[in-house]
Amino acid sequence: MVRGKALGDEQRLRRIEAVTDATLSRLDAADLFDELLDRVRELLKVDTAAILLLDTRAQQLVATAARGLEEEIRQGFRVSVGRGFAGRIALTRRPVVVDRVAPDTVVNPVLLHTGVQSLLGVPIIERDDLVGVLHVGTLTPRRFTADDIRLLELVADRVRLALPARENSLDQNAALALQRSLIPTELPDVPGLELAGRYVPGHASGVGGDWYDVFTLPSGWLGMVVGDVSGHGLQSAVVMGRVRSALRAYALVCDDPAEALTLLDRKVVHFEAGNLTTALYAMISPDGSAMHVSLAGHPRPVLAVPGRPNTVLEVHIDPPLGIGRLLPKRHTTRVDFLPGTVLVSYTDGLVERRGEVYDAGVARLMAAIPLAPVETVCATVMATLDVEHPTDDIALLAVRRLPV
Image (cartoon, rainbow, N blue to C red):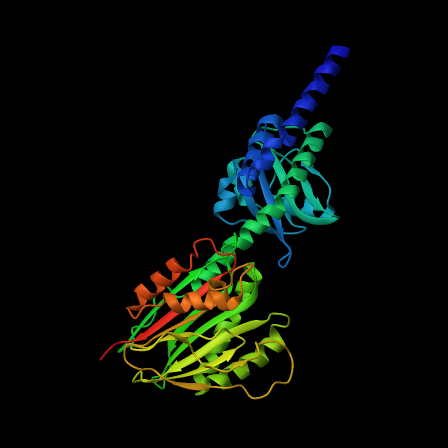
């Protein structure tokens, strides 16, 4: 009898070690979920295992990881809290055992189709809040024990610990997808002009609030934007997307860049409170000979004109967007855009360096810009300013009026 108890204690210890193994912590969330499900299937001698996470807005459990029930994932199975086996666990926040699966005890057709006979499920709890359900099943009738429940609760706790890393990974993937959709891969083909741009993330997340944009207007003018929303990550990328779309809309109803930025400022103050934004908005005439430029707290662009030294464009810098104060009228500056001229607009990550005055970076940029096709201009600037590993996001946009 004593020997039997010792063996039972040893088995329980082996089970606990299997799901608290430190090597699990080195796996990413998706791999960790799969590894935990594989281990619990082996330890409990079960045929199926699944994790369903709570969609709080819908109040539904969503199949997130599964072993032996992969069809549940492929079908994107969802079940409302309170319905069926998993829904009952979510509602009561207590373990549930089903000795004999029947159509009136489960609502998931995959469980019935697979032939699962017995089920055990436990809630996944984070600080008294339900975050999901973990359940296992067998293809032959089975009576789950109190030890089985305790082990599954331990696995559920490991799943809970992995959730923040999973959320961070999902946020980063979403932000990357959003940013890629908003930074143009191809710029408009405009007669008489050349356009090229670059975007380099300055943080491990790979996303931020910097962007550039080019669009043709119904009037025949060309709109160009370079902007920078404060912050990094998904939230900044989301705000950037909204600001970008709003400026495009205002550009359709405003023939003056300063007027469009004034409307955009109101929008940022009201709907994006706390998100400071800088922006350059320029309009180039249909014949390419003139440019109208307005700056909202943004670095002045650099102008390279044939036969002259490269210079910073003398444009009035108005306050950034979103500071929330009643401001004087914003300014628009008209600039002659001569044949062969190159204009380079950018965000401050291109020129700012820690421990160096800002003007030194601008001087380096001015010296780097050649009178050449814009792809050459961008490549030269990026190489000269050594921005392979920037500490801040960089957006760069170059436009050249073709020589006559």
